[in-house]
Image (cartoon, rainbow, N blue to C red; front, side):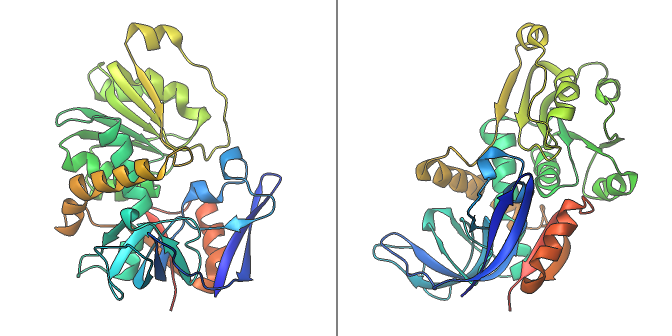
Length: 324
């Protein structure tokens, strides 16, 4: 089968197309025939230690497709079922998946729409619900609002009844995000936006901030928080890994700062996230309250081109790769 691998050389990530044996599912595994997959910025970053692979590793972290074969002991799925799942190595014609990380695809969804869902919306569930504890009537700040997780966070925040502020460097992107329910858009790229956030919230600040950009905006995110505010560090696409922490504000406001990463999670923890997503988010996706947002679709052999497009920061929502 054809499979794209990712190698990191210095701070650059390079995709290599390789011919690999089609895997056979072992006990507790199922083999998915991939029909579409999405690009996740974190998986492509070469500057981040957790994602480096000097010798190469299978790339891609989520996919939509058909169950092709089942390993011993797998229940609840059968060959031919349409599912979306998270797994390592989804930039391939076939991928092994843990059934606990798979979700049936609603009948009305295309392969592309289904592939836009798993990583972005499970991550949004972790940031907003599992650890962010976002409630109706609270203020949510999303920095890097046009990314896949940014769009998912805006949509989920609105379904939860929150008031949502989004930060982006593009006014055109903010205009499109307002169509998705964004309450307040702040155009900023490199500037401290906290004064605008405080003004929009009547001086109070936000209850939860989701930082999808990195160290360059950490301080502004922290300064934007209300008393008892929570700050989720989800990404660092700016490559800035070190930043100052305001201890006085952290202590005086009783702030919580936490990270969202798949790297340290056990299989049981990943399964718990899928269960939470299925319970709290999937119903709103299935009934149309949260429509997957797709920016562009590329063919499988255009995956390096799709990677370059994602790295250009032009997207709003997800970039999808379709396999015929």
